Length: 420
Image (cartoon, rainbow, N blue to C red; front, side):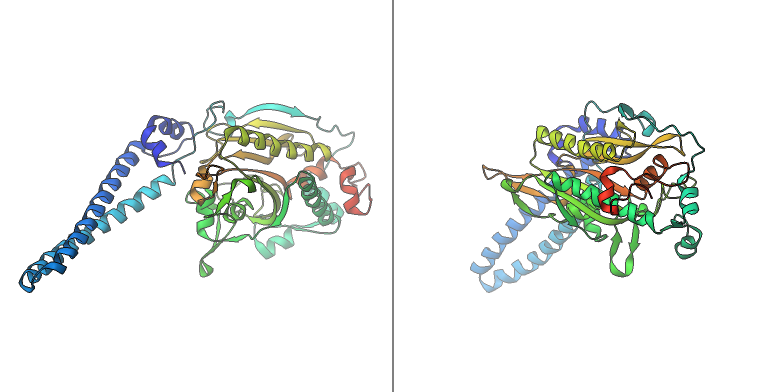
């Protein structure tokens, strides 16, 4: 959410953001509605003042005058009630529109409609060259008895899976290493709930647009979160922190759930696109300073790159286009890792800076050293999301005898085993 004053004073800037992010929003209509809401609020305030004056007059009046004042007051209260109702209705309409206003994107972000306009800014590592016919991860997992796909689908339907044996241990090793890596960089590990209220999804920016992607539990008035970011933002929603507490650095771990609406026919084989997965999320709350945000954006990106380097996986970093970066993001860099079976790089990490857009929605604030209350800046990036990252490990590190070489950094989590 943007500061409404920014929208009033710089509508052309907001219109540009709406255009380059491909948002269906009439900024002029929003500004006109804001003017109307303020006019109605002024009418209500004036009427309440008049009501107070009338009350004093009633207290001083004789009985005959009071009878007249009662009749006038009844009519006045009807009109005041109608104005209040109109104000409330129009204010609710305005709030709905404000939730659709995009964040102002970085002026160096590629302008484009979607993923096709993303720009590769770095490539690291070399994809493996095999002297044997490599298997894709599904064939490898099934040959080694490391997964149940058909049986899992009998339980849960499409895009379901069940890992077995060493595949489970390897997945846990990846998540544990990611968590430990973040701890060495002063992040606080925290396990967060996947069951969240609607307010948390609105505050994070997942709602209203992403509602169809989210599993709902209507009997409990709860939803299943698609990322730990939802709970991490929600932990401090409505709070006023002290500047001395910033930055908050969290390494959140949680199961995540996504309906994957709109992805029919995409990545239907195996573990690349599933409904349930595990994730270690990097999350930062920092002071409202562009340079500070940029520093943490690079830190989050560096941590994800370090993990991929440690796992000996080739990857590329892309600058995401305005149409691909999402509603509230100022800047987004995806990291795409090499998948041999696809003969391409696929997204495994997404690093985002949101400035105060998210904090305004969640009312996440801090008190500056001069006593001023400000909305914080928030940032996030994946540290590790499995089983997609597990797929990359299995496919890139497979051997001719269908074993898998374990990267050295993961061996301490697997009793020193070098090969699975």
